[in-house]
Every structure is written in structure tokens, then in C-alpha cells.
Amino acid sequence: MSVLGRWKVRLEREKRISEVLLKCRRSTALTSFRGWIPVSKIADLHNTVDPYTDGDSRVFMHIQGEAGGETVHKRGVPPTYFRTNKYTESFQAIVDTYGVARYKEVNPGLFTIVTFPFTFGVMYGDIGHGFLVMMGALYLIWNEKKLTAMARSGNMSEILGYAFGARYALLPMGFFALYCGSIYNDMVSVPLALFESSWVFEANGTYATFTQHDISGSNFSGSNFLESNISGSNATYTVYPYGVDPTWHHSANSLGFFNSLKMKMSVILGVTHMLLGIFLGALNHIYFGDCVSLFAEWIPRVVFMLSTFGYMCMMIIIKWTTDYGCQYGDKDHLLCPKEPPSLIQAMIAMFLRPWEEGTLYEGQREIQIMLVVTALLMIPAMLFLKPCINHNNSHSSLRRQRRGQDGSYQAVAHSDDSLDEERGPMREIDSKGSEGGPLSFRSYEELHEDNFSRHDDDHHHGDDGDDDHGDGQHSFSEELIHQGIHTIEYVLGCVSNTASYLRLWALSLAHAQLAEVFWEKFIQGSLEANNPVFLVVGFAVWAFATFGVLLCMDLLECFLHALRLHWVEFQNKFYNGDGIKYQPFELPSEDDK
View 1 (tube, rainbow, N blue to C red):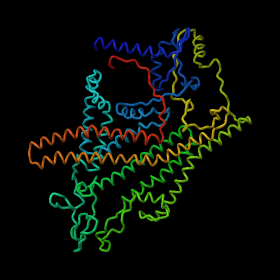
View 2 (view 1 turned 90 degrees about the horizontal axis):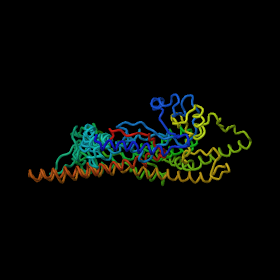
View 3 (view 1 turned 180 degrees about the horizontal axis):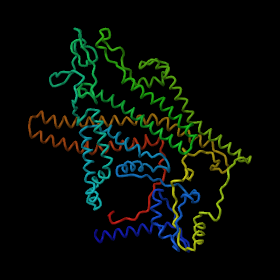
View 4 (view 1 turned 135 degrees about the horizontal axis):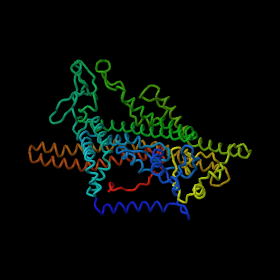
């Protein structure tokens, strides 16, 4: 390192030390400060500080919460610390950008490692483009040391710096894009015929059209169905082994087929993703001991979600698994036995005309009436149960206090054991004959969740009898209004959030259509011209358009939409995100420059 570089490192070290000293509490004889440290680092701290605390040293350190130590006092909110590595760091940064997890709260970063690249892959699904993204990420990872040195020296461009910082996130994003592209059977808009198609068609001029076959001498060319591998009077039904049959990409109703497939798939994935967030909220309630929110708020929310959009997902699966095709082997059932119902109309009729009999399955009317009534009952349950229970608990606590039967005690700290910031450590130091300043760290591994000095309304139990008026009575009206806002937000959010997941379908459709337009205009057009010059120029234009639009702009667009789905639709079901990030004191070394 150059002389200027070493000077910058020393200057940065002095700056950070000065910043810490400015935060210390000073007196005529003492300089004290407090800090947080993970339990896993306590041994390292002892090894560093203990040599300076022996004998008549002027340094004293006390770790609250250690075995044999004093009870930890309530001194603010403990910071949140998650151990990460190179791979998980990118996904944890995605979560922390929205908000740092509250201490001991469920960390969405663990699930984001899988759900984020998967939702991206659903929107960006293409075998070729996903493979290129994955190879680009592997290149950045393989040359990590070289590129890291380039970034530290300042020779890396801003765009490349962003890609390099997200290299471990781009790797699974490219993999899931490749995987979803294999499900769609789409490789830069060209389907792959890896297996024998289940549909029979013949070329009519330059266009591919499906044929209608005769069965036992009968002609069914006027019917609205397609035959599967029919030869004479023998009808065989086969399913394409993996992904979408490539013949669908050449059919006249290709766009309608993929729209229906991707739209229904987006709804199922969205509802499943939101239900995961709701169930993670139950883990928060259980850990923090919030039984009121668990039974009076969480259960009605789950029942409402399952009764409405969970039922819609069930109808999609039922429709997918029902054979509405004609029975070719049976001469008495040559026509389709029943028309496939419209799920959108079925959902509308479920709430507006519940008395009508459905055509999806037997007993549909009775089940739908029961689900509608259940969903409607959950709305007042979400609104009134929690405020009423908290109001009753508050009055019961007040009555016990007035009768002297509360049974609670106020802790009084003995003067010799006091850990007051000013007098306690000073007395301890004086008793040791030392004049130095104490280094006081607090271990937060054994802290109870009661250490929170601030709670949002989702975790406020209201049973301690304190409110803004100071009269010891619970404000029922304020909590009822607050709960009403949350109820309206949740009910309307179930509709809007489910609709928001349709962006998976919209972005996937846009990506596929752009790839198809580029391929048809630049590659197929050049091939039809039968001119090698046109072919070279067309390929160059196609490559630049694919890189600039699909591999850069569309990748960023799908990334931002996946980000929004996790921040809004997923994390608002359970995540508070109002914690304080653990930021340890570190001195820069020469290797950091």
C-alpha cells in the first residue's frame, strides 16, 4: 500500500475512535460507555480486555447477563444481529432495506433466499436468458478476488459494481429463470421438442394447423376439440412428460392457453406466499407470548383467507384435474359431457348469487354458502375480539390493584449492586482503588422480550393499565379504531395483494412476447431473405436487442417487481421491521483499502 493509502487508513481509525469518545459519559475521574455484544463474541472480548483489567489497571469491564452477573436492566431496545455469509448477505440486505427485524422477530431473510429468486424466475422464465444470467453470475463469482481488488481501487464502473455486489443473488435468479423457462418450454421464444408431442398436426402451406380425424368413419370436423394421437378408431391419451407441449407454441390459441396457465399459476403462488407470511406471524405471537393476538386476530385472518382466496385456488386445481375432453373410445360420448366453467364468474356468483348451483363439482352451492358465511363472520371477529379482550383484562387488573390482590412487586435495587450509569460503576471502581473508566457491555442473548421500550400496536397487550391519560384505564375507543383500521386494511389487502401477484403473469407474458418479436423480426426475417449479409446484420441486431432489453432492462424490471412482492405482499403479513441493526465498532485495516 502506498504512503497515501496508509495515511488514509490511520486517519479513518482516528476518526472512528474520536466518534466513540464523543459518545462516552465523562466525569472528573471516569469515562464510561455502554455497548452490545453477541454472546458468541464474549470470549473474544475477555481475551482482548482482560489483560488490561488485572492488578491496578484503570480499565474495568462488566458484562450484564453473564452467568453469576446481575439481572439485566431495561435499557432500551436490543439491536438485531444475524450471522450472514457471502451467499445470504445479499438477501439479508434486501430485507434490511425495507426495515431491520425487531429483536427476536422472525427473520424473512431465511425464506427470501428461496422465494425471491423463484418469483423472479416465474416472471423471467426463459431457458436461454436464465442460462446467460446464471453464467454471468458464475463468472463474477469465479473472478471474485480480481474484481474485489478492482472495486477497492476504484477502477470498476458503477453498473458493474452493482452486478458484482449482487452476484450471489443473480446466481439463483438465473437458475430459477432457467427452471421456469423449462416448464414453459421456452428458449428465446423457440420451443424445444425434447419428447414426442401429444398432438397431431400437419402443415397447411406455411402455417401449422391442427387436423380433425375421423373415428370409425365419422367426421367430427365441426366439433370444438382436438384429438390426441388418434389413428383410425384407436384413441390414445398421452401427457407430455415435462413442461408444456411444444405444439402449443404453434397453435392459433397459443396466447390464450399461456395466459390461462400463467394467470392461474400466479394466483396459486401468490396465495401460497401470503399464507406463508401469515403463518410466520403466528410464530411471532407464540414466541412473544401474545395469546390475545394469536387467537383473536391471527385465527380469524387465516380463516378469512382460506375461505375466500384459498377456496379459489382449490377451484383452480379442481378445474385443472377434471377431464372435460370428449371420450373418444366411447361412441355414446363423442361430445364433451359438460363445458368447463369460468372461475371468475364462479367467484362473482359465490358472493352475489350464492343460492345458484355451481357446475364445478357436486355440492358446490352448499359449500360456497358455508364459506361465504364463515368469511363474513371473521370480519367482526377481527374487529371486536382483540379490543374487547384487552379491555376486559385491563379492568380486571385495575380491580385487583384496588383490592390489594394484584400480587405484583416492585423491584428495588440494593445500593451495593446498583448498575446505575453514574454512581454504580463509580462505587465499584472506587472499591477496587481504581481511577479509570469502566467498559460496560451488555449481552443480549439472555434478554427477555420485555426489554422493548417501544412496541407498535400489533404487539401492545394493553394489560399493564397505562395509557396517555395517566388514569390507569384502558382506552377502548382508541384501540377499537386502531383495530378497525387494521381490519379494513387486511380485508381489502387480501383482494389487492392477490391481484398484485398477477404481475407474475403479466411480466412473464411481456418477456415471452418481446423475445418472440425479436426472434421473428431479426432472425427469421434474415433467414427468409436468404442473404448471408442480412443474416449477420440481423443476428447482431438481435444480440444487442436481447442484451439491452431482455438481459438488462427486463431483468431489472423483474427484480424490482419481485422486490415489491416481498416487501408489501409478503412481509406486511407478519413483519414489523422497526428494529435497530447491530453495528459493531470496527477499526479499518490496510486490507480494507
